[in-house]
Amino acid sequence: MSKQPNLLILWTDQQRADTLACYGNDYTEAPNINKLAESSFVFENAYCCQPVCTPSRASILSGLWPHTHGSVTNNIPLDRRVKTIAEMVSDDYLCAYFGKWHLGDEVVAQRNCREWISIEDGIYRPHYSKPEYLELRSSYHHFLVKNGYSPDDVDDSGGAVFSRHFASALAEPYTKASFLGDVSAEFLSRQSGDRPFLLNVNFLEPHPPVFGPLNNLYEPNDLPVGDAYLKPPGSDASERNRLDSEGYVNGGFKNYPLKTEWDWRRLRANYCGLITLVDRAVGKIISALEESGQMENTIIVYTSDHGEMMGDHAQMGKGVLYEESTRIPFFMRVPWLSENGEMIHGRVSQIDLVPTLLDLMEQPVGEHLQGRSLQPVLKGEENLQGNDVIIEWNEPDNEKQQWRTIVSADGWKLNLCAHDRCELYDLNSDPCELTNRFKDASQIDRIDKLTERIRSWQANTGDIVTLPS
Image 1 (cartoon, rainbow, N blue to C red):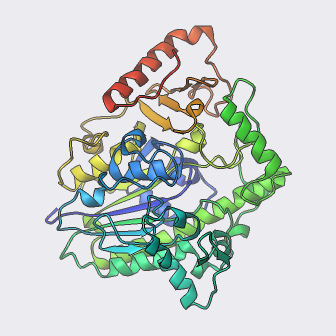
Image 2 (image 1 turned 60 degrees about the vertical axis):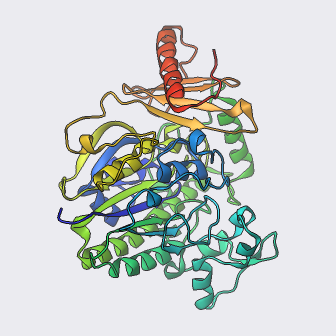
Image 3 (image 1 turned 90 degrees about the vertical axis):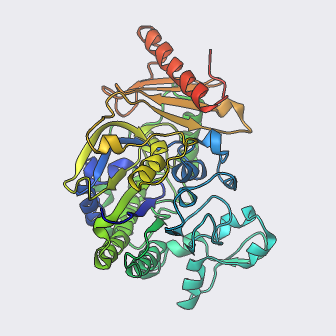
């Protein structure tokens, strides 16, 4: 490279790993994302830090564990003292954030971002830090008004807003995904290379409401499903898993009925449609980057904040520790290292994203960061074959639901909670996590060793959650 590299982070909300071709999917139409993966380093088994929006987003941007940055549940604004990657790079960078934020004041530019395009209003407004921000509306809100639409809802403060359900029913050019594709492409068209840029583009889709203009693109009965599909967790599963399952079966999901198998399949088809919708927006963004002449000097990351159950174990949503909820797509294109596409085997956590990017961008990698740079792995100097992954679940007001999980390098997964049924799964022989082996006497030694590895991680990161003795 002859000049500082740019950074483009493309991330979705609630996209599980097995929705893309690089992870074995041959039915979801995502040609632009799939093509990007073909020239990227693809992490075979990548995990979020905590499978819910705010904690995961804060970890992706800060390089800190949820228990460290403090935004341990949804709608806890990220502490101003916690820096994001846009605040860690040099002032040479033009930093911009487009899309869903979910870390505090949704509609105001912040965190060293000179350009800020917002898409969310509604449910986040009660968490704004200043009353005057309630007078503001998102960039997407103004886009819809400009195009002749009127808000369909009123929030608790009396403000007129567009609901997510209203936006999800619009034609493709007016969806949040298409809007982000257009504004991101316009931003990139202005980049001449005189100044490096850092652009985050965060899509809401395929997050609920699982509904959009491409609902009918997929035939529900044609979509493949696995062994865990619509199979409720057994009595040896944690209370959290079993209760969530019963709730979704009896009460539906986000106003969507789930009374028959076809209902579940219809929702899965809608979900695939939203990924295709995002893919078309990604196509606009990549085309604009190519036309700007900056493609070969830009690191491109594609990932998601967490996964989605989508009917597996008879559950919807996230917030549980199954693979569908915790495993996410994660790949990065670093053209000066390789453009051939390489699968990085082993297990990795998004905690390593920030230090890796800073290292690749030749920016200082702060000692406070809790992950490590994966640049030596990308260069082939190291590998992930001995790498364990830790996952958190935090509920400060409910000590009975504080979980710590380890996914070991050799494919065993231990979920620990001091007040619930603990779980042990062999992902090698039981990838769908159907058989809990925590009470298997032959696994006592394994459980002890994995527990000690979690305790060691706790000591190194300052985590004080109580584990079962």
